Structures are given as structure tokens and as C-alpha cells.
Image (cartoon, rainbow, N blue to C red; front, side, top):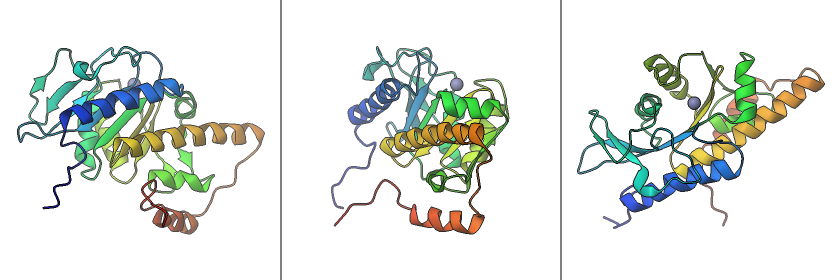
Length: 226
Ligand SMILES: [Zn+2]
């Protein structure tokens, strides 16, 4: 044993990372009011589950103690009801055993693109940050529904982000920092794609090149120099 803690071993640290992510998304303008939500895989007393933001939580007033814990068995702990998108977070974490953090926002440009019925294609090599040659679009289903959760789970089995038609976007990362970095990048790419669409017809990179970039991005955001 190295004695090194796993990312979410310490509950206080885990809770702080969820609150910090929500505040960062708010500060960047990717989240507004109480529309977004965040979760972090966290086992409590040996029971698998997740810490998640409460329903109606506003990032500006959110405190670590406000977070809910939801067990895989449906058990709940915390002062508030968990986010109405809990099924989406649970399904995302189940679909990606390698992911520990899930973020959901209505970031403007990702949402705008999803409202046109488009996925984000490989118009730029950075699209590979989501793990493939597009950021897929999950068909519309009511917020908080099992249908939406299942759509997200299906999309995330082969990607680290997806757009939600007439709704928003989701990102998943090994760490909260990675989920945040992916969400920020995908929102920026959606903005650029919308600009490119307004100016003309964007060229799309072929599958072979995108597969090469995905391989090079295998450890995206985790590479140390030297
Ligand atoms: Zn939403």
C-alpha cells in the first residue's frame, strides 16, 4: 500500500470539489441560477453512491453541507432533496466505471446547438476531447426522466460528453477537474461551430485523423511535462 488516498476517499475534500466546480461554472457563465448540477462518485460506509447538488441549488449560496448523498440502492442522506437530474447522474456513473465526476449545465452554445437537432461533428480536432469523432446529441426527453437518463448513459458509453436536445449538455471525467475541463472545452467548441456554420459550411475531419487525435488525447489534461 502506498498510503495514497483515492480521489474521493475524504468526504470533506469530495464535497468541496463539487461546490468549487459549481462555482467555477457559474463564474465562467456556463451555469446560471439553479439549472446546473454536479455529482461525484462517493462510497459511504462501504456503500457505493454519489454526492450530488441538491434540487434548486444556486451556486452562489451552495455550501458543502448542502450536498446530498444518494446510494446506488436508492438510500438518501442530506438536508435537501437531491437534484431532479439524479437519475441522469446515476446512469452516467453506471455507464462509465472509469468516470467519477459528472456535470450538467444549460451552457448557452452547447444548448443552442442541441436545439438545432445537431450533434457536434469533427469540425475541429479538439472535438476528440470528448473521446471520439463527435459530441453526440441525446434525443429530447423530459428533465429528470428515466428516458433522458438512459439516453445519456448510452451516449457516454463511448464519449465523455454529450449534448441534450432542447436542454443542455453533460460531461464526465475521471476527476472533477477533468469533467470541468471537458465541459468548458465543449461549450467553447459549440460556440466556434455555430460561428463557422454562420459563416459557411465547416469542413469535417475524417475518422482516421480523429482516431489518431483521440489516441494522442488518451491522457488529456493529465500529462505532466518533464
Ligand atoms: Zn437541465
